[in-house]
Image (cartoon, one colour):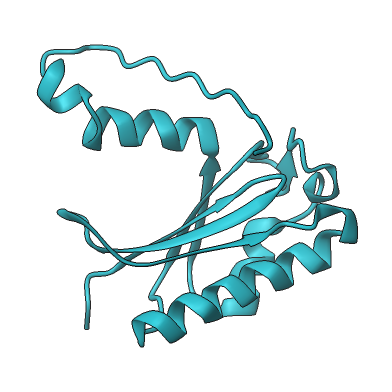
Amino acid sequence: MNNYIWGIDLGGTKIEGVILESRHSLKVIARKRIPTEAEKGYEHILQQICQLLEMLKAEAKVAPQAIGMGTPGSIDPYTNNLKNSNTTCLNGKPLQQDIAQLLGIPVFIANDANCFAVAEANLGAVPTSFPNAKVVFGVIMGTGV
């Protein structure tokens, strides 16, 4: 069994996937990007995510055990549906459950800005440049580029 970490960044214009060597190594094993094509709807986005994962699996020659995903918006704790996403066809949908069901593995979803702040605090400049920082503030400017 490998310790690979699988991540997906689901954006309004692109979906990017990456496989990292382990929690302790940021070595990129595979990285792919495809268009979101949100105008084609929710089911199409689910298929795009599955297609991206197949591309990553083919390159890495290994299947994921679980996947983490960052996306605009957040999971409503009462309904388990996505809310406040700028990709409006995702709002009100059980994105996490649908992807987990399609893939047959655990899927963990968090807000992309929160993912950014946690990654920066733990893996970015903060640990070396500001090791005693009590608060890390992250700002993301969505450009659609």
